[in-house]
Length: 162
Image (cartoon, helix red, strand yellow):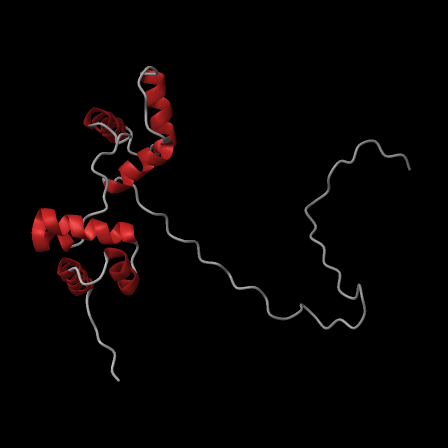
């Protein structure tokens, strides 16, 4: 027996129409469709208010972000960065606090995100790693057969009595 493929929208539509037939209770329908009663009632409420359009997926993005940077703050950060193109977010924030300490400035990470979003910073290239040595330096049969030492030059070790 082959699997029947259905999309989410079809399942929601079938659920709503079966709920309107009132042959089974909403709780039983929710159990059959594998959803919670809260979700089932949500789909029924959306269908009664908006019709078929109400069953489609909605955006989960927040409607309001209370901690978002204001346009004035963004302009001041970008203006300071334009005057000092080599400064990073840490130094920019420190200078902004020094110039106007009464203002609530965003965190260093938020300033860094803003600079990246505006294309004012570039990722550093990853440093090429040198592979490690696979074998020993020389053939060693016993412990302490191979001793290595670097001579860095003579150094003064204080007063020495001979």
